Amino acid sequence: MCVVSVCLVLVNLCGFTDNQEPNFVKEESVVGIPSPLLKLKSWQWWVLVSINIFFLIGGQAASVILGRFYYNEGGNSKWMATLVQTAAFPLLYVPYLLLPSSSCSLKTMVLIYAPLGVIVAGDNMLYSVGLLYLSASTYSLICGTQLAFNAVFSYFINAQKFTALILNSVVLLSFSAALIALNDDADAPSGVPRSKYIVGFVCKLAASALYSLLLSLMQFSFEKVLKRDTFSVVLEMQIYTSLVATCVSVIGLFASGKWRTLHGEMDGYHKGQASYVLTLLGTAVTWQVCSVGVVGL
Image 1 (spheres, rainbow, N blue to C red):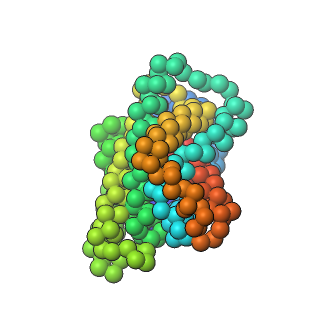
Image 2: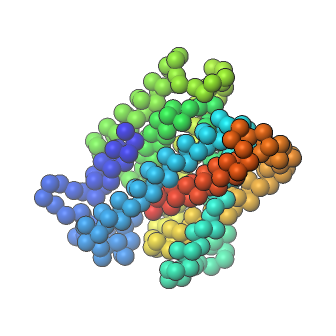
């Protein structure tokens, strides 16, 4: 449902009707559409959008399943689950170095990427707690509430106007998440009490709200501060916010003392040590794929 709503909102934002081209092809003043994208034909633009949607859907599905698998098979470190959500960011340097450089000043990078990175780390921790106490299916359904938060934050921060299509998607997704919260027979992982399930639900809901705020702040940075929105800048945003978030997660892991339990966690992993390492690596890579898709969109 979330994927369908996102696609519908994209069509609505582009101003498509049955016999029209996207509005941004004809109007140079569309807010948030950079000049490189204005030069694309409609089919080229949709190919670019489709690639990012594929990254988002595939990356999120795989990362959520692997994250739930990590907890099911004996993993219990919320800090480790938080760390792997950004730890694979060095992989993005490969495509980044192949693109034309668009780096901004060090002062601008610190002012933008440092606070955004801290927000990313906090959001990742909320996601980790939510996934610990929720099933993968429930977790993914609650993700749909992010569209409602997106609408609110983009209205106030990015001057995004409400339309009937956006409002309809927001209401449907919010109502679906509310039904999950009220369902006494909700699909919770084995052994998770009702109180922990509620904690997981609240944390996941808070994570969706915080991530929506993060996306609006990123878009604001693209438009008002960086003033460019090329793919290299998208990668730069993802790389440096992930760097900051990874540093925060590592500090949290050591400050909490949880790093001492990681060796025992690996030894006691139900599927073996090799599976433990591969699960964390796979989770890290798929989260980066998902994040590139999100920031790209």
